[in-house]
Length: 81
Ligand SMILES: [Zn+2]
Image (cartoon, rainbow, N blue to C red; front, side):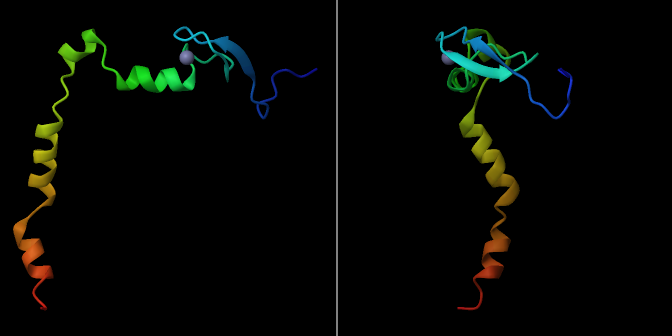
């Protein structure tokens, strides 16, 4: 048997370390959570991460607007009417 065929994706059963669900992951992968939990862990900022990476969605929006929203662009487009 050739177990090192690169075209064969090897999966292994893994118990999610958060909810205990049994799921399949790529052999040798580092994930320890099932897909839904992995998403939740990304979404929920842990108390430790909040201090190092504060999320300020308000400031972010303002930054994007300031870059993309140039008033002159809109004025020039709507000049036909
Ligand atoms: Zn899970």
